[in-house]
Image (cartoon, rainbow, N blue to C red):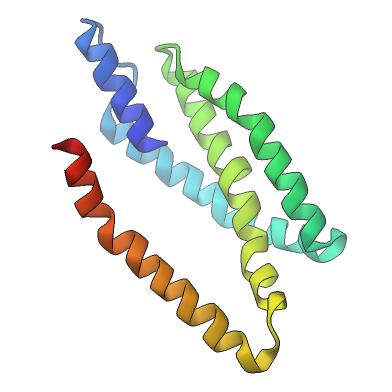
Length: 143
């Protein structure tokens, strides 16, 4: 969301208006949203233990699909309070709801004998490929 809001601020500035939210304010919103995420992940994990991981992933995915449009509408006006509300509510609802279930769901997919190799190797290789090539891809797209 930070790249979207930074791009939106640049677009507003190019139109001759003053952006509603400065970059330092965006980073402060990330801090607040991350603090809420720390509280939300155990809650979502508990809910997944109570209601089932498959059901929680389906509900969270549908909630994320439904939640996208209202959250993006909060970002479009040049109002700092709406942008702050959209940012702080959007991260815990759309991202953390999936992350709270993710770890235990993946661990249940494999038997204990193959779990370490199946999860760790694929997860770390995927992360290395995605994160390692991200700067090169970003530079190629920007050029």
